[in-house]
Length: 90
Image (cartoon, rainbow, N blue to C red; front, side, top):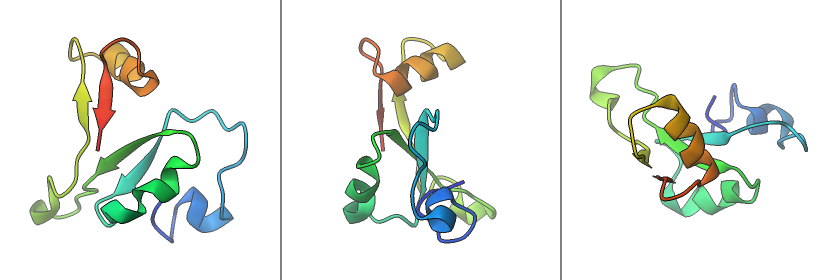
């Protein structure tokens, strides 16, 4: 779930992310203002953004760009780790 949302998110429910939790990234919703992104970088995980579209008009409202060598899941995993030229931008 989106960590920037009050309901149904880890931070919204617990107030923190438990230390040592094996997460690859944290997901932010389109509702997270650009000025608030730094608040989530402190947790030390890669950040993703998505539109969380439940209606057609919300599709593409927010997105994550992946720089990959190929369109494969293994490439996404490497981008999350910053391997080689692979990167993620929000």
